[in-house]
Image (tube, rainbow, N blue to C red; front, side):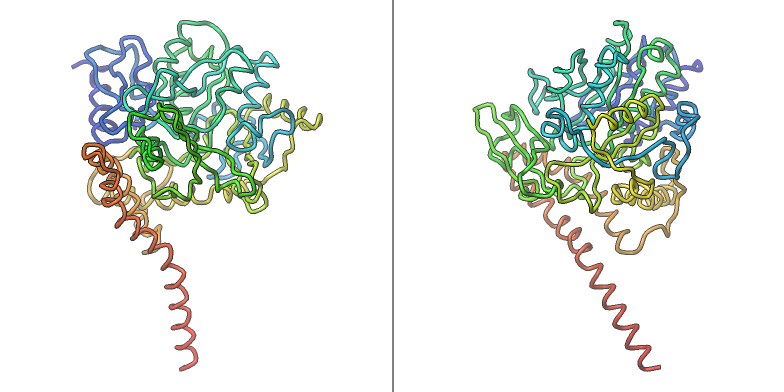
Length: 468
């Protein structure tokens, strides 16, 4: 077995065998790739081995591989002049909270419109020729061919048409193969692990390094399978295979930004908008249909992206139904572009500190720092391989209640995939509900009981002091 075959086998025996593949497609981009990427039975993109011998080591471009460079080192290479703030926000020149004033960016976006605006601005300024982002696939369905996929836009109009959040799996190998064939300067939008994979690819592939000149990151909770879309649509009377379109983030007038709706459209023309909180198991924290890899990621803010955008879940912005972004800027040129737009009053942005940014994503950081430390400890106890992380294993990182919550999240993640398939086979959504409801009840009870337990402890402590 030669060296390259050793690397391929090692990647297959660790990342793939352990269930840590995020399906990004980085390992399938190279010529004579040793892997290909496709949807599995649960609607998650996963890599599969081929018989080819790759042109370079696929382990060095996999974001969950032990051979890959971590986010800290990548950011240091990419943004040496950007100060390192802390372990949450990493390197950046500035952080903001706000929205786009001009045009319809805010109205048409999931939040404050900054994601689409920055891409359009890069095109208008001639800094990029094309944008790689996730777009609706008009030939797709959520049962078989994917509804959304990475595509390439060349105009502002195309970028605007592709706006909105897609809580849906995608992969990059096909679109990046096009980038290798079609010269130009590209901006790419992606989740933290996808941006890391692109940065790793650019270190290994001089063609991609020359052509991908900007990466726009998205703040990430976790990546969903294709079944999440069907799970929502089925509750609106649209069965799996009959969903034509879905908008995961519909702004509802007079409601806080977090209380958004979901719009589904069936192939028969049936259409419904329903508030997220009115769906069974609509709470994001349950982690239904999540990739296992997401539980072993420590990058919430896409620390290797030139600029990151996400929702500003801060008290001062929560009640604004039109949505507000947090923006973390790491590239000096992009920061200058934003400063000029601010001076022209095209944007409304407040300066934020690193602590504000961390607080805006407090739940995500708790899951991916203290929660990850606890999960890594458990894996070590069970002698299971895990991807190397910047978080150290710690069996005491969480309280007893949160240990229970993290265990339920893991169970809900795994059970949601199988329960939904059982419901599809039985043609009865209630089968999925029956399987998940006891777990969700336990999960909700943990959150409800934790303050009560605290109060009981407080009362007992006060009673003991009075007896002393």
